[in-house]
Length: 272
Image 1 (cartoon, rainbow, N blue to C red):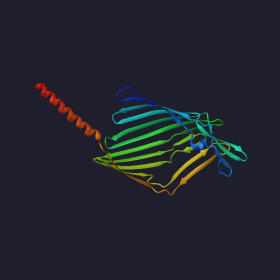
Image 2 (cartoon, one colour; image 1 turned 180 degrees about the vertical axis):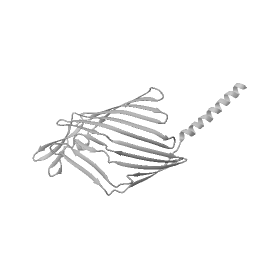
Image 3 (cartoon, one colour; image 1 turned 90 degrees about the horizontal axis):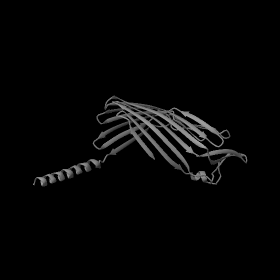
Image 4 (tube, rainbow, N blue to C red; image 1 turned 180 degrees about the horizontal axis):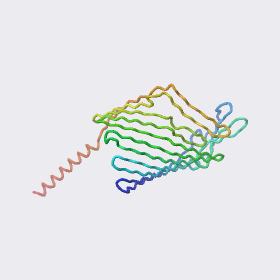
């Protein structure tokens, strides 16, 4: 992991990150045992699979001025010879096997804005993203655009804090599968701070019990479209209690007492 930060002036900052990660095949991907999915499909692993690399580079620009904060970032992810599923007709069934594909790429552009409407009382933030996916297999080439949105509102008064967050429209492309990463959701969080205690209550989708997720496989031999729709979900409420133990402040006070005592002794000795 490589991280760099350059502060242009009091209002402008540049950040650059790079990360290299190796991904090893799973047991299911290297298993030579053929398994039946249904009456028309079977899946089998491959023993010759090896570890592949994922490269991630990100450049972020931040601007701060009084009550305004803005952030613009660009992130590029490259998978070198990732493992993917290949499908073919074999002995009257669709046989799925694992093999190294050419590459997979992802470009993410993100804009985030935050403004203190009322300092120390009300803060509003919003963000929009654009993601471009490229999937290059041995026998296919797929692309996808995704434009998710995000909105957040935070209000604080004395020790109380209320946060409202909404997200929606996020999709991704992995191999030949397009899937919705998360359904459109609304989150409400109320917290109260008392001394070293912090009490919070978090509720997900408080006004609806409807939940939808979509998944599409673009394979020409055995593609599919899958819709998960649940309209009977109950609201989820999470209660949390945190207690903060601050060791650093006590340690700092102890150092001050020790330092003060030493200076006093040295001054007295010099005076004598």
